[in-house]
Length: 253
Ligand code: BT5
Image (cartoon, rainbow, N blue to C red; front, side):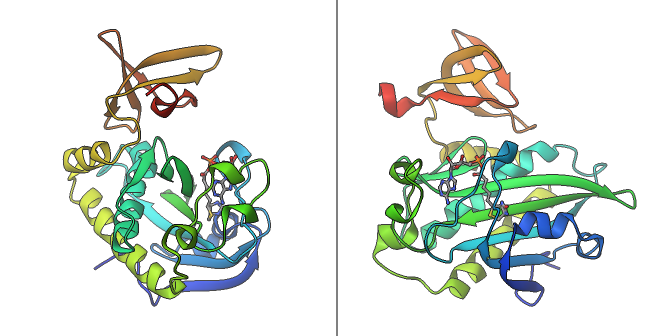
C-alpha cells in the first residue's frame, strides 16, 4: 500500500508551521502517512531556525509523517536530500526541466530557489518518526518576497506564466513522494543516489563549503549513503555532513 494518500490529508487555513503542527501533536505523529497542508504559515521554518517565507500569495506548505524502522533503513540523514528528487520529478510534469537539487535540500531553477525541504525527527512510543516538510513557491512573483531574498527566489507561476491548480500539483507531488518512499523501502539506494547526482547543482564543478571556521574547496562529486556531500579536495575525498555554501560553481564558472 502506498504511504501517502489524497484521502489522508488535513487541510488548514493558517498555521504557524505545518512541521510544528505535526511535531506538537502525538495523535498526528502516530498516524504514519498523515499529510498536513496549509494555505498560509505564520512562522514557517527552514533549517537552523531560518525563516521560510510565504510570499504575498498563498503557496504550498506540506508536511507528512513517516515512521521508519532503523533496522531496515539506517541512513535517515539521506532521506532529506533524496526527497528533492520527488520535487524535481513533479516540476518536470509542469514543464520545468532544468530544476536542480542544491545539497542538502534546496530546489533551484536558473540558480534561484523555488522550493525547500525541512526534515525533522522525533521518537514516540519507541517509534522513530520523520516529519518531512516541503515549501513550494507555486504562485506570485519574486517581488512578493522580502527584499533580502527576492533576487534569489523563483516561483512556478513566474516561470510558466500559468497559475496551476494547487490540487493538481499536490496530487502529482504525492504520487512522486510515494514512488520515492517505495524505492527507499525497497532499498534502491544506489539508484537513487545516481539519480540525485544527475540532478545536482554544481556536480563536477568547483565549490567551497564553510564548515565551522574552515572553508573546504574542491570538486563536487556527489553524496554518500549517509547523505553527506562528497568533495574531491586535490584527490582526497572529504565527506561533509553539514555546512554553508560559500562559493558556487556559478560564481567561478
Ligand atoms: C529550507 O530551509 O529551505 C527548508 C524550507 C522548508 C519549508 C517547509 S514549508 C512546510 C514545512 N513547514 C515549515 O515550517 N517548514 C517546512 P533552508 O535551507 O534553511 O533555507 C531557508 C532560507 O531560504 C532562508 O534563510 C531564505 O534565505 C530562503 N527562503 C526563505 N523563504 C523562501 C522562499 N519561500 N523561497 C525561496 N527561498 C526562501
